[in-house]
Image (cartoon, rainbow, N blue to C red; front, side, top):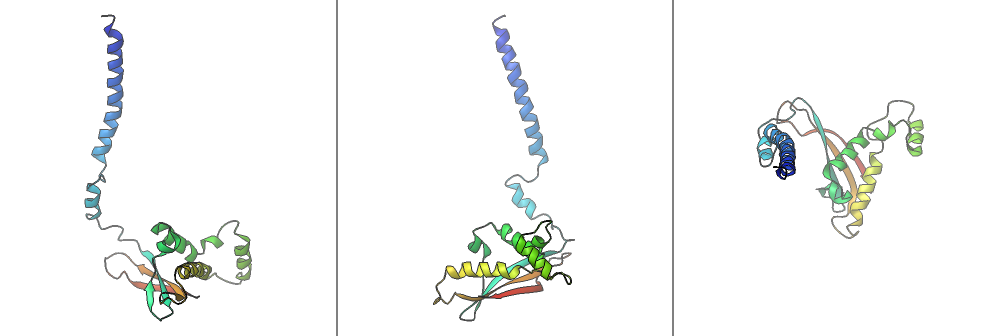
Length: 176
C-alpha cells in the first residue's frame, strides 16, 4: 500500500488537472455559436446592423484610351482590404489633421485653412496621386491601361433595408 500511494496521488492530480481543463473547454464549446462549420450558417441567419448607415469607397481610374476601370486597392498597396479602406476613411474625415500634435506639413496646412471649416478629404489628392503613380509604375506609358487620372467615389448605404445601397456621396479626382 505504501508503494501505491505516490501513484495514486499522481493519478488524482492528473484527474483534477484534466477536469480543470476539460470543464472550461466543454463550456466554451457549448456556449460558443460560431465554431466552424456553424459560422458559415450564422452568417446567413441574421440581417446585420440594419439600423446603421455605412459609407464605402470605390477606386477607379481613367485610362489614356478614355475607359473607366475599377482598380483593386489591395493590388496597389499589398495590404489587407480593410486597412486600405480604413486609410481612405481616415483621409476623407481628415483624421491626420485632428491629432493633438500633427505632422509639421499638416500643421502648416491647418494654418492656411484656419479661416473656416476644413473640407472633407483635404489630403485625398495626395493619397490618390500616390496610388495612381503606383498603378502607372506597373504599366508602361504605351499601355492602354496607363492612367491619366484616378478617382475615388464615396457611396453610402443608409441601412434599414437591403436596397438603396448605391447612393453617391462625393468623389475625389486627381490628374496624373
